[in-house]
Image 1: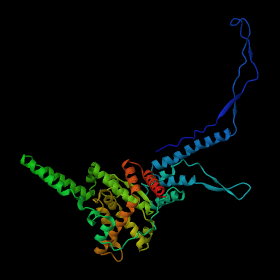
Image 2: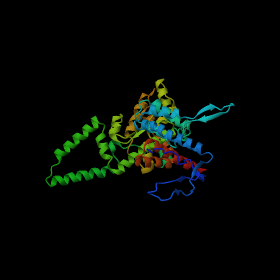
Image 3: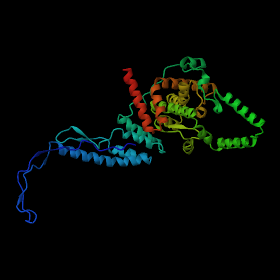
Image 4: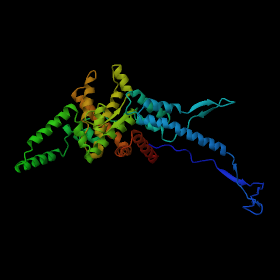
Length: 408
């Protein structure tokens, strides 16, 4: 976290005058036989140039601002979102009547560049998602989040009935490539299984009995799956760089799609144990909030627009993997969440309707991420470098701004 520094425009002074009086001093005879008169010498006299007093006052104001912003730093460090947001609102420019007229002037505490973004880093521990939404809306009103919600009112063109053939025509990929693998299986799983069984057979022929140890390992894996949702296995898998990067690609897809759809993001959790603490068992996760959907569900109905947006965000991780790697592996939990929501609808969707809706959602997310591929790469790189949420979103904004500039 950068600490703002005071302005370097310190008041300047010029020395232009000379002393006009001479000074005479007599010393005791034991030191000097004759009185000594000091030579006339030019001594500098400081003269403040015009405007330097004003600059000094501005410097003092900046120093005071730095001290005040330490309160905001402390609130962000402690993940105290209400306190951080209150501070930002207290330094928000306010209109004041100008003396002698009806015009208004802006009075505000100076805001160091980029500091207001950091309020997003305090969202991760907030239990009040409405407060998280207020933080995003505050930055939108400040003109900081220019691309937030830019696609929320856009119904992407394309057929609503999406068969596997249509899906391939629109994405260039088979339907199987855009579906999560079950139980973590991928295209290389048969080879891994054959290699594992071959290694075990070789050790058995050499007199090394691994069956007791294998039984213990399988027992621990079962306990991890039942009680911890696979958290330990996920933590071990994160040490494998290709798997770790695939997780980053997946979560960046969720994050970017939610951001473009105008859904506030609470945070991106990449540590399985942190995810477990926050109720995301055994997986990394991106937590977002859809105010419209929550309101409609509380009223007992769900519009097609809100459901479409939610499904696109859910399948965005799978779409991101397919876009980058040519096929998806993760996203099974997202698919299960989608099914559970479809069953709650009145009337609930049939199996065929759920499959069609899933294909439509992943197709739309795939195309949306393809149009904003540069922003997705920027989000992946920021997550890979370990940056906070505010920096990740800032990189997204910079990437989208550069795309607009290039298009123009």
